[in-house]
Amino acid sequence: MKYLSEFRRHDLAQQLTAAIAAAVRPERQYRLMEFCGGHTHAIYRYGLQHLMPANVEFVHGPGCPVCVLPAGRIDNIIQLLAQHDVILCTYADLMRVPAGGRNTLLKVKAAGADIRMVYSTQDALKIARDNPGRQVVFFAIGFETTAPATAVALQQAQAAGLANFSVFCNHVLTPVAMQAILDTLQPAVIDGILGPSHVSSVIGSAAYSGLAQQYAKPIVIAGFEPLDVLQSVLMLIKQLHQGRAEVENEYTRAVTPAGNSKAQALLSRTFRVRPHFEWRGLGLLADSALAVHEDYAEFDAEQRFAMPAIQAADVKGCECPAILRGQKKPQDCKLLGKACNPENPLGACMVSAEGACAAYWAYARQAA
Ligand code: SF4
Image (cartoon, rainbow, N blue to C red; front, side, top):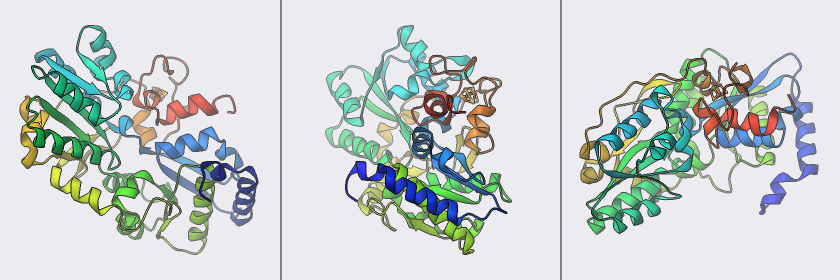
């Protein structure tokens, strides 16, 4: 199958659904975590949870980069904007994520801060070139998928001697988060994992082999289309029945065992691994995030400006941390659809395009 529509074919979905129904054993539960927000959206959007037998349950995971960013990092930037005359370049998703005290970048922009929404690191570089008299800070966020674009921007800035450009680096690492989830949820809250696909195209499917063995959990790298998800569920169920806990790759059209070696080399040249980084919902995790490499220190916003660690509390009653750990679902949050909705999001899971609460609100609440 080469084309997008073929991964949404109704007849093939029916065949896969029938195969899943025939494969499951009535006496057991199958709790399958979809690590990525993209999978959560595919599941809700196409109603895949309703196609599953009653004993197959999808458990949402932490794979949404906006959702796992702790409020304190947004407070860092708000403080920076208050103290320095900088232009902040950021993706639109971050504008409404609640920081400490329910402040947001959107409110700060409305109060006069110079915040520009960009679509890529290249937009941020252009703004820096066009404004040589101002400091321009790019708010970098995302898993291993988006980090290479930030790496390219750092290299270009250095090559061009772009002295007014810097990066506030918040790139995070997927395998460490998966390990934290497996540690948190031990002994057996989840039975298998639909593994990240875009991230895996960079780091490779073999990056999870140790985790599958250590925790005895099968992992299937899954594409984001509905047939990808259904096929991956079937692969997980087969592994469970066969007593295997291996990494299998359903998304072979984009992911190889070793991943993209050029992108990996780029990342190791321009970033270093942070000793610790705080994740919303998962707390402080060792070796779980990237910082700008010393060779590019002059383009590191955290070195150019004083940016102390800030602890900021999440909104009271918001269940985002438990949802990101796979322990609760959006419908378990008492604020859902009341105080919290897409027009007035109280937590990151409602703000982000990849968030579980946003997906539930957009696609699933009428069917619940
Ligand atoms: S509904 Fe809103 S407040 Fe509740 S968990 Fe989701 S984002 Fe947080």
